[in-house]
Length: 235
Image: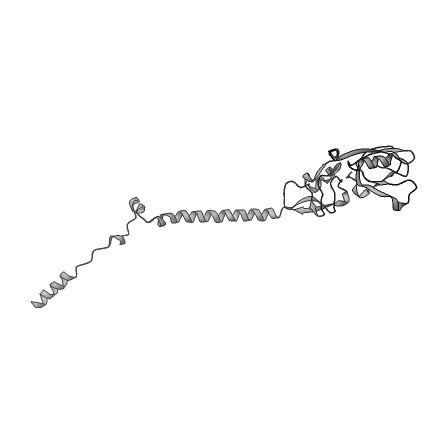
């Protein structure tokens, strides 16, 4: 009898454990999902966002790689050019760069004829359209047109408008050591006569501060001009 009572006491002291409701395997209801922590609910959204960023980066990398293979040919200047100078053919070279706006395409270099530099251009500069201006715009404040009546021997044969010349003071009866350059690169505005056997009238554009001196020497017949072939405009 004692043993039977002991068994009953043990049975009463260790009741069967009830099943934990959190271990149930039934699908979660909408209410259950709303009760989940915020971190769990945001995880799919963050994953999707990460995938989108990776995809965007991949597309950008492909685009940059494909664009790197595209090269444009533009005009580069190989020598020093002062303001107001035409761009000689010898000063142009072809340069390949990544596509960009504003530069003068190599295929359009012929359109530079009749233009002059609007700024000082240093060697190895990529030429932009803003660096050139039509030659006619040299008729601006700070410039002057000077007419020169020249005899044969004072003007090179075949001189044409838009050519560049040196304007030289040659005193009468002087030696070459006494001659000096008044204008190192003046643009020829017009030429009347060829200068091979008759007098020729040449109009040049120079800095306005040089005009009085050049005009004075020209009235005495003490002016000569020499052409600068390397600065001829593109024809």
